[in-house]
Image (cartoon, rainbow, N blue to C red):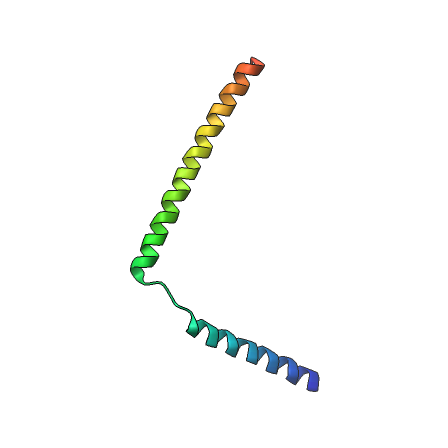
Length: 69
């Protein structure tokens, strides 16, 4: 029974520490969050266009080299 109490006590201590550390964190403002989100979305779109374009070019080159299609 002692082991169970120690385990529960450790879990409670852990979550208390998590709450304390979360309070110390500096959270972004709404504007910072919005700006960061826009940057991520634009970067993902640009990367996806680049990968798609590269794929089309490589497929075209492979078709020309193999005579397929």
